[in-house]
Length: 358
Image 1 (tube, rainbow, N blue to C red):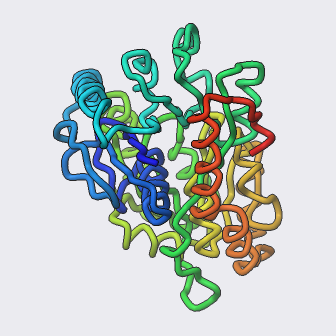
Image 2: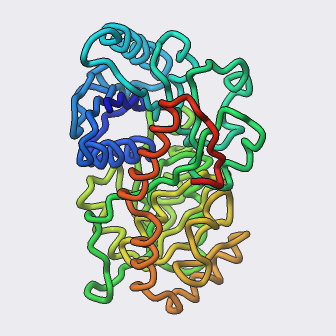
């Protein structure tokens, strides 16, 4: 099988990718290549992947440049698929991880599987009207799948996985240093709430993450995060940490805070924390209750008050239990195995699977 993976257009794909969709794509493509699948990735120049790279243009960090870059990216992808359509290098399946290419599926002949990374209400409703017959969708959690109930184009549910081989868990070997918030710096992820929790408990906290090139993300950082950091001597910000720094932060944190105000469809950060032997304190939104086992790998909270109380109970969490949970539930190999089955189903044009089957 020859699979074309389509990435998010703005950023590169590599083992150091910050974005969740890029991380999942890199992990899955690596696993598929190990299984003997011929893989091509359509991504920004400079990406580093296991198979063939189709460079669709330069990555962009210019503010609000998404529309231009996405058009360039998509045109290159369509051109490449058509060019190869009648050759020995044609694609058996296109797997759209970009979140935006699949509305153009009618322009290509190959079957297309689109993984939906976002909550349904983040997508314009018209995108799910008159969907091309060669498109199938995948959800990444039961919480997300429930919002698509009755939508026949959803072929299955394959949860995200992480490369567990990267994580060296802290089972008491290293001193834990404070709280950690890790992710994309934007309003819906709400790192300002993590700062409030730290201020109320007196705990030191590290905010680590990337500010995407969108003006509203940058304004949020300037207006809501910078002033708080100036007022909190125990708060530190680390922009776009490299992988080595990220792994160390996860391993050394007393707890990872997940403060998102969106109905998250997954949480790689929660998975990575468990693989590092580190408890999570998260708001019980979206798929977080599917990933964080309350009282076992961390605590689920309904409010800041609940979260602050949970931070007093971190001693109840066993790091070895966190690691075992990650190994059992978040394996990249399991994700690849389930995608392999879904690829076969989609290529046979039979979308008989339902989310609960996967």
